[in-house]
Length: 495
Length: 100
Image (cartoon, rainbow over all chains, first blue to last red; front, side, top):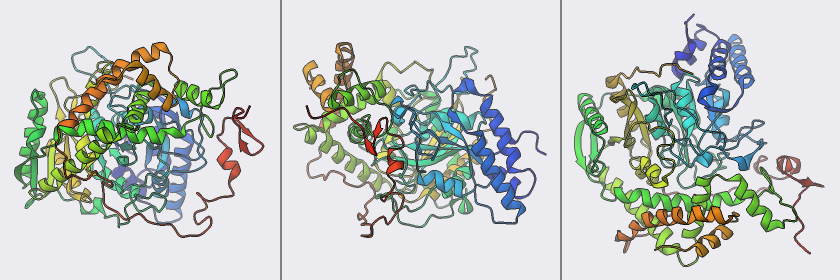
């Protein structure tokens, strides 16, 4: 019997259950206990220990009966609260979805249950996935399990929007969790908490049943503590779904089985525009270290240019709010969620009162910006121009990928910041995603892997960006870094 | 370009978000800061560039022309559709009176 099952990752749990070293029920009980003991982190909006046990018992019964087990069999996971889960409250971190209990299951979560995973609970997140610090949730801030080693104990941001996911995986409340990435929401929180996370090519994972934020950007992906665990879980999440009109109708490769950290013959591109003025010295150093690691793995390193990099964020902050303003029009107090009906209010007043009470400030800001840039007279100047810039950003990547196979860059411009440090300045917060957003706008697969700790003792991540459909190239380069970084640090338990 | 308070109030109304005076006081400068920041896109020469329509080029599929081809998204599930409604009435969504 292994002393602490919650130190194990996806692969180790699956193989241990399959091999009879421990039961799926023992695993689920161990993680349920960690979830229950970690209320101070506020990572879960709803805990579902009974769901985790039920799935585990099924796996144990299937094993006893000699039935084939799925690739996630016996692995309990956290589910970001953006995924609709049948019979379990789904709020997207917003007051406006109060008490919403879906009658259906998202395609991605269903695939994970079909593969033998169980649900520990619904993970806290920035409201409607809009945020980079998990400070916009109606259910309160998620607190990172990491602390600076200066002894100040300032509560730190776990990143966002998948902040509940990053905290839960990092603090060993679950071996893996789902995330979603619209403009960095898997990669930036993964970097802040010393874990791995991959956003696949747009269309790999079905969006059906995921609460929509910006439909042309939203992609689900796994967050876990190793590259291999991410590869296994992504394999279970991905696949064609006729219910999503942008789902990729192509086979899902065996990413985990094909993992190979030998990069001989591969070219790694280093985008010169990402080396910005005033770049954090420790981030620059970790990036240089990443270059050295990939060379050591046999890759050739080439200088590339992505000339429109600096325009990616402003383009994103037109495109994403525009799509959000359309997608979030559905929250009107009629069909589900919150209804605010002031005395003698008419229908229009009910809509406006419901949305005023139900949406948080950041969501309102983005709906307002989106409404403005789509309004008559301004559409071409803002929205059409942003979509043209998006074309240029995609062309930049296409040209770069004629010279290289994978791009290496930092994931975020800094390590985790303190809660409250940036929440009063939306643009300072947006700048956190400066390295993450370009790949989102181009629909490319991109991953963050831990590279080490900075001088404050906080994790830093490195980002790998691949060609469309080349998750394998991203995972392989990620594995090469993982093997050399040998990142073993974990937050000291204070909660 | 900077927008005035009246314009922000109009946008709030179009977006169906009730905003009282203090909320507008907060929103106007935030709104203008964000607009001023995104306006740097105007510097980019996009002449002859087509706006992106699909990030991964794909032909839009048509579903089979069959009633309830997918039972999950088909008909006959009124009670499920209404299950989360804040004020269902007689098998319908209830709303405040819209005709005087």
